[in-house]
Amino acid sequence: MMDFATPVKRRATESVVPMINVVFLLLIFFLMTSELAPPEPVEVTPPEAEGESADKAPAILYVGSDGTLAYGDLRGEAAVTAFAEAAADAPRLRADAGVEASVVARVLAELAGRGVGSVELVTVPQ
Image 1: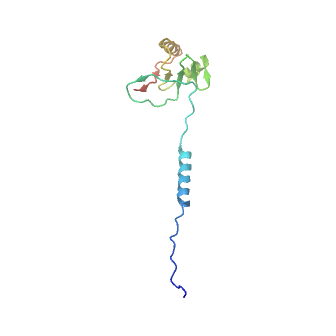
Image 2: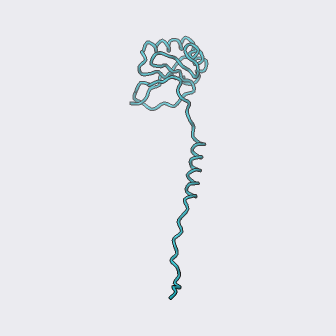
Image 3: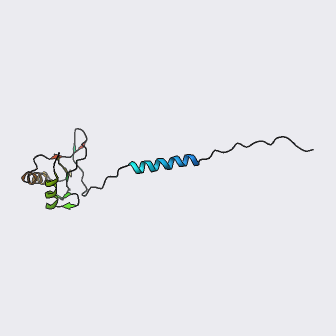
């Protein structure tokens, strides 16, 4: 005897290709719209203080824990000279928490001698 019953239909599996396409489009979108920050020229751990977090300023002079001065690719006196020339709106000094206060005072006095009136010291909230 022959069985003429209709065969059981298998449920079609859903394709994951559209989901993969969406994931890749999102990945491309986030890569294209993200902004990568350049690394700091000198490793600095700022001191902690109470208050709000500060925004990045275009003119930042870095003072390393060993007293190394850096501004962009410049080091030492060249960095101080370039920083003093570029310091316009709210110039900032980003000093390592381990640097001696006398080094920071010397740098501030040198900047004052070059015409930089006020400099903000960058700290991180506690």
